[in-house]
Length: 113
Image (tube, rainbow, N blue to C red):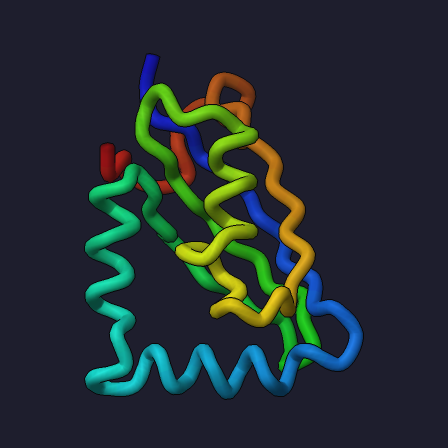
């Protein structure tokens, strides 16, 4: 078995987009903790390969990879939880779908795990 890739559709909850963008931009600014969060997520078995916002109001699409042995349910718990994408704001509904790499013919990105 190998790592699993997920396509995630992030939909903002009503009235939460502006607060989320402010938190995201603060986190990604120098000293905001983004690099540390990426390292912690990687150690925990989660890696975000792409971040593709369509507009300030969303949706946002991402491709995540999870280490072998992590279930879809565990990934959903992660993405919705305190280490996930909500910055503690409960700003997004996260719709996670595993990518069928057999049907695709290959992985969407080179494996991180």
